[in-house]
Image 1 (tube, chains in turn purple, brown):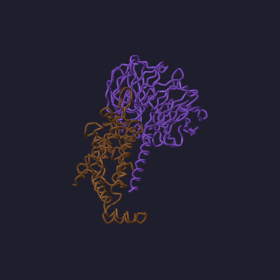
Image 2 (cartoon, chains in turn purple, brown):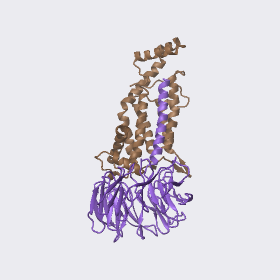
Image 3 (tube, chains in turn green, cyan):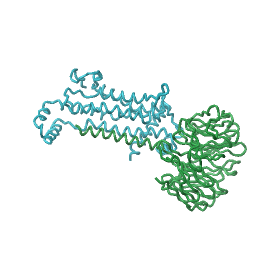
Image 4 (cartoon, chains in turn yellow, red):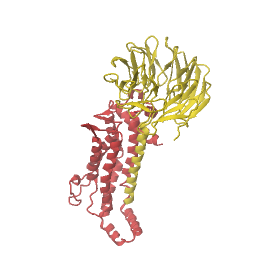
Length: 355
Length: 261
């Protein structure tokens, strides 16, 4: 009799441990965000933000010095014109750090949910979109700029973009918003066919492009939100598209990579890549670079020719980052947190944080 | 294996219910709990019967005589006990098994709730790969995580004068306690080991589940509360609820035993 109750109590305790572990694991679930300046790469990689020397691949500092499970960082860090590194955490706080030393300048604590999106930095303002459905305008001193944050219909996971007049962003509630940069008031809102998980792209002639979880690339009129046209993709689009002035580039979950002319619509070319595409592509002169979940980074010309995959151990969900001549890649589930490739795709160095 | 057998089907059933009822995740959890309880009802009924048999056994003259006879010989006593179990058709684990079955269900449900709510990019990515092909997930995302005053993906607090009161955790602890008390088999024997263990469980379980409710997503608390209420209802249907056990100072054996069906 005693034995069976001991089994039961033991099982319940085991359940407590398992659930506890599960909860901790679930809160820290995304992929890293990377940015770089002339000296360092900055990576929001879970329990810390790391600064890594671009020449050597050696860690310069980490923030916070001691890991806290409740403070994971995954939002892409951004650097302000006055030299602050801005990064949001899953602990609902937005931090300003000194990029040279990693010391904290200030923290913005008004948000009520996770910072999943990286911030947008303009000449004098930080536009920060939070999963609490709000867009905050923050001064470089860490104070609110608008009387109240702009409240959207749902969580915002993609970084906002701006054309100088409005800030544009999409929500999980399948809406695209334009908000006036000065007043924080809505200019327009437009419903689309699926949740928007990534960033929009501002195009020429007052156009705005968004990719949706419903599997479409949508062109909107940036002046009034009118849907101009829509291209269906083979599967859902996670991160937003990228443009190089001629084409718009975007990948989908089916591993299909699209180049779409900015002015005419239709498709310039498509490529079938090996694996789901989660991160946005990046453009380096006439080279397009994109990663896939199969652990490949693809380099290709902007014509879709000369495609060469480079295998990087791990899953590539994070958008790569250009740092001078280097392409920085942050694999998930691999041995390294950050891998630096040169233009030929050779690994220059890799960074694994010391425990 | 765990994913395929428990988490994926649970998540899909939850999403199906959510879709059918028009997008209320709290109601979906309640309906899902009722479904789970219906499916595991035969086990519960068997647990109730086994507990009753076990109580009967503990109080039987035959067992008390054996205890007296082999007082100093634990090994012999255990042998005789097993022999008697066999003779009377009692399985010592039968009353414990249904409770153990609940554990993977709780764990699976917790994972399913968190997965379905998909509050982070990785969770949404996993959810995308969890749903069965007949779902058009983009029509469901994002799930409405609000139910009454709660965000089902977060631990619940009601703010009163600036203080966060874990109302749901308190309700979980109370309903667990009530369920344990009113469904506890009555034993007039103060030396009955089983009765002592039951009392211990009646104390520890509310604390443990209350702690879970305090710490984890409030969707899990909805499951606990619904499960407790249904548990009481199941016992009531089988005529095994003893409401007088809630009266302070109540001693088993001072009232007539609950009717048997």
